[in-house]
Image 1 (cartoon, rainbow, N blue to C red):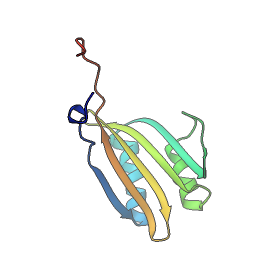
Image 2: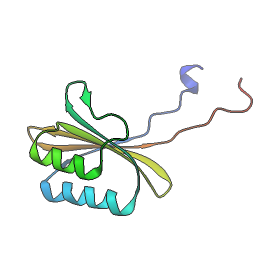
Image 3: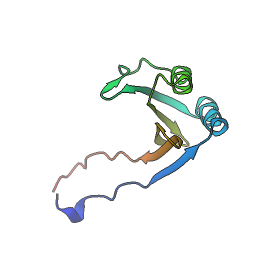
Length: 109
């Protein structure tokens, strides 16, 4: 595959969330999406094992400071989204990306 054949990366959306907006995000994900997975990041290279964290776990651990970040993976209106939350000196940073997974073609070139 040449560089010209490489599909462009989907756009990233960034935001800095206050406590009220962060709570609303968790509420929206819980009530309006099909949750796939929650991954909690505790420290450099330390995270929850796959499939063993809940939204409530992530929200609590981010609020009490025991987690440095979390990733929420969900489906909303037929698209898969990954919201990465990271604690920064300025507050909770959200990086959101919509994943478009492609299937291999039946007739590879």
